[in-house]
Image (cartoon, rainbow, N blue to C red; front, side):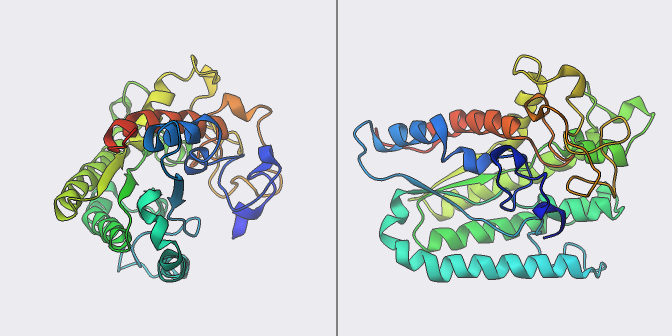
Length: 311
């Protein structure tokens, strides 16, 4: 798995179990602490009308949605991670789902976040934003097809997360650094990249609307990762993050954002900040445990009224 298996990842919980963070990811937060209890009380009633459990449609770290996000690119890494992801998805759906059929109506499914790696691969290969916009409809269609497949096996409540404002991430602030102030918004995020995320999210919301019409008995909710991140980002100081390091990686070094392409988190010699709870970004692309925890709680509060739970 490359650098994801290095010691730095997951070090806060003293576990290294294929996570790009110092501890717990957003979806994992939902099954821990107060988040899980809020869902149980809201969706199952105080007396526990039925057993609540959350199913994360997991995948191979770094895997894209599409088999090849650009048919003009031949890169074995893209093909292999996609195939591995497909094998895992097929195993879950064909082997695990039939055994859980009686429980599927009690589950909340997380299908995603997906699509971000398709864009990451191409951006880091130097493709233009205009070029990448052309594949967004294909990526969103693939996500829609995945949700349709999950619904077809009996799921009735599904959350489909959107993409983050990637123009705020250290990896892209480093790669696309410019002296042109017009390229940045009021929070020093790259407007062009954030607009790419907004375009993806807008198409995804429309796909969810179509899915609702096609599946009137299911509850399909958009997970607003974009605004969850923006809320944390814009309230960083009040949430205990270091206001001077909001755009800096914790695990990384170099430049204005403590991030250097080619010397990323997990590579020997790459340092880790003394207090990850003061940083939003863990490795320049992914978030720290504390940032994930705040985002998870924001998302829960946003989606609860939309889940049509019977208390």
